Image 1 (cartoon, rainbow, N blue to C red):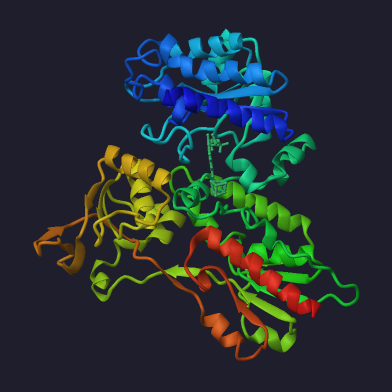
Image 2 (cartoon, protein in one colour):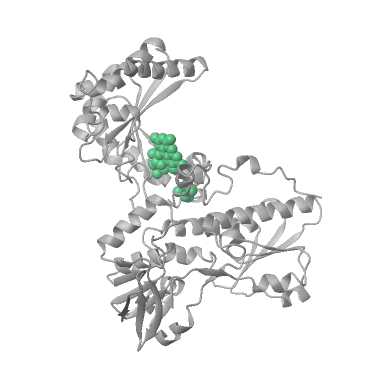
Amino acid sequence: SEVEQIRDNFIGAAALAAQAGFDGVELHAAHGYLINQFLSPDTNLRADKYGGSLHNRMRFLLEIVAGIKQLCPQLLLSVRLNLDDFLPNGLKINESLQVCQALEEAGIHLLHVSCGTYPSGLTSIEPSSYQEGWRMYLAEQAKKVVNIPVLGGGMIRRPSFAEEVLKQGQADFVFLGRPLLADPNWARKAAQGRDKDIRPCIVCNKCIDNKFSGRSIHCTVNPYAGREKERPVLFTRPGERRRVVVVGSGPAGIQAALTLDQYGLKVVLYEQDSELGGQLNVAAAPPHKYRIKHYRDYLQRRLQRSGVEIVLGHKYDQDHLGVDTPDYIIVASGSTSLLPPDWADQARGKACSVNELLASPQLVDGTTVVVIGGGLTGCEAADYLAGNGKRVTLIERQGRLAPTMERKNRRDLLNRLEENGVITKLNSQVTGVERGCLLVTDGQGKTETIDPDNIVFAMGYHPNRDLYEQLRLLHPRVYLVGDAQHIGGIGAAVVQGRKVAEQILKEDEL
Ligand SMILES: Cc1cc2nc3c(=O)[nH]c(=O)nc-3n(C[C@H](O)[C@H](O)[C@H](O)COP(=O)(O)O)c2cc1C
Ligand code: SF4
């Protein structure tokens, strides 16, 4: 039958792996893929010997295991198994624990515990609201019923947490997915006790979003992930060190400064604020985005250990060139919230931008708030305000909220907006102010008035390019990076910072 043919293909694939010299293989029986579909009563509607009772639903998997054991007895065999599909009719823990026992009896060597399927949504690759190690209880349950080693994980970020999982006996091994994209040296650094040197994953899920969109996997915080071949072979030149000024300490500026420093150039980093990080500081404020602060702290630690000279609380301008002329200048001056339209003047006193809100939450001192603009930052502002007990109305001129946001975090955020009673008005825009009230016109041209206590503008950003325009008239080698060049978020800024540094290094080599 077709089922038996597919079963034999699995066995044949394992045999090929053995022939190619692999020590082991893992069967994927999780996340809604084929073997999981056989196990799950939600998807397995068969009436033959492969469907119905758990005994029958396990048959496909157990026949594959038996076939591999027979054909390649030396091959180590792991099974990645859903302990819970998190679907109303899916595989649940009472049944999956029986599958664990059957697999042990069948002779597998490692049980890799996972959960969730595509239809159940957010649990196999979680959005940022999930707590570190939230699914370890599943591995712990599995460990109670088998003696073979159990591998558990999901949303584990810190070595200390992983260590605790092992110490508590919740699992025998811990797996990492995204943390290894963010820092491929995670395990080495953990083993060396260098936890603070690990570049942290911020759970933005851009990596998996890229994959689902058919693009190659890249990482927001690691500019080389998926671009390994782009890493240039550059040589530091002995002799006089070229000098670079970097203006702005957001992710683009810091990445450029660190890359140049690594290759031996003398870098001075100017930041007009009293702390490093630029937009990272406000980006970390909305709910469940605190890991951005961990990333900022990591960058700060790397800067402190580097040879980069940091000048805080100092606005760099063209007058500096008269005093001291560097060989290169990188302008990473970021972006500013777009100014609200003229009518907003009448609402002055109760209005602020998203950035102002996130930096100084006390600005929103009333109970009812209208957020104008339902892009990513507007939705995050609404989430933040509603989570703090405000009654929020979100107005978006398009028909969809946060259309560019990564889909898992987007789904999670929209769920929270709904749970917290945020009123959304799509295809609507504010057309004016009358006696302090907002006039909101919907897609049908119907206008209503809303009189909120506060208004938050989330209408996008414009690049800060004035400094660049001034400097490039006075200096031959001035580069523009990050939001100041193109509003593109952390990932784009980090890659640009890296690329401009490499460009300078290449020029310097010539
Ligand atoms: C970019 C990316 C690709 C993934 N691809 C797969 C896959 O092909 N099969 C699979 O079972 N899990 C896949 N996963 C899920 C991971 O194996 C892991 O279970 C999940 O990311 C949670 O662990 P983490 O928090 O350590 O990333 C993928 C995850 C990411 C981020
Ligand atoms: S892209 Fe985001 S979620 Fe993926 S590994 Fe990098 S930081 Fe983590």
